[in-house]
Length: 399
View 1 (cartoon, rainbow, N blue to C red):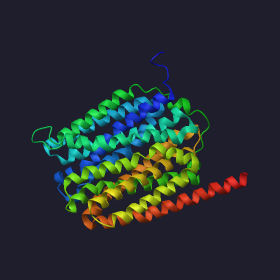
View 2 (view 1 turned 45 degrees about the vertical axis):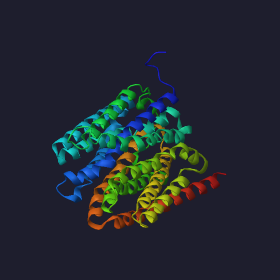
View 3 (view 1 turned 180 degrees about the vertical axis):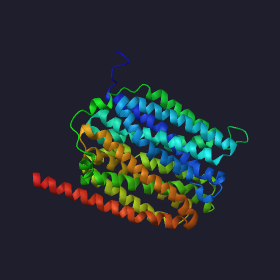
View 4 (view 1 turned 135 degrees about the vertical axis):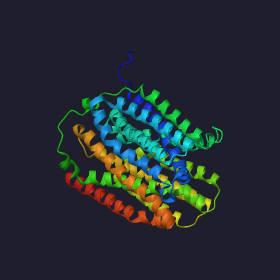
């Protein structure tokens, strides 16, 4: 068979899942280290989470041009550009650590976030490969690639800590660059039709599309779930150290949090197919609220560990449920512009949450930070309940 012929849907989804694992391993490594290293390099401790915030801002800002580029050139060229940004961001971050340059460290993480901005379309590409009937499962399988990241990302941080003599964690970021390079090679084997080819068909005005309650709930729910998760995850390494626990406790807490984020993906799609996306989103918001209760119950290692696992599972249900609900709210000819709006809205809110996380923690502590997300989670839970009831009324009317 010619190398230019389209690969099977299963082959494409496997490539996307492996690429997701490599990308998220790089991102998780930064999540585990960036705030701690930021506190070492920053002129003000309140800026410790700025590298993480820059990463999330990069994700948000890259989402729109990534969508436009992939509509014109196809998914694969866009994904390859994203991986190149990942390589560049890792190398710049390593150089910044070597020179103790906080500004360059922040820019390096902005580039890493831009890599994620391109890579976030892996899950939509999986839907195109599998077809709408298998959307939930395809999204879940790609997102499940993050299970690898739970162990590979933090472990690379530990292994690379002293690779370069006298230069702490420079080796970790060099290893991160190798992950992005491996993703670049893997993505070069991806074979998908051009997005324009699968987008043929009528398209409604964007205002009309966004007027749909289901679409608004999908975007709002995914954004709130992601923002709550990232706000807490960003400051957790600082909180663990601030409570007098050893630095060795950071890695297992982050690892099992990421397992909680991605391991449920092996069955989240099945649950969505059985119970519907709104019901799974509701479960996610209940779990995220449960995290708040656990987080406020104590500051020992097991409090951090159990709360962060619950935080991860809640994020999984809220985010994948929101993504699956989103795919039900647009026609084929509308997918790219709706996906771009979704990514920009979700990661714009996530960026704001990350920017505020360091300031809230530095000024008010963990209790206030956890309490700050509670009203938003309650609002998202109410919205998900409302849209499920609307679907039920429509189904009853059509029966």
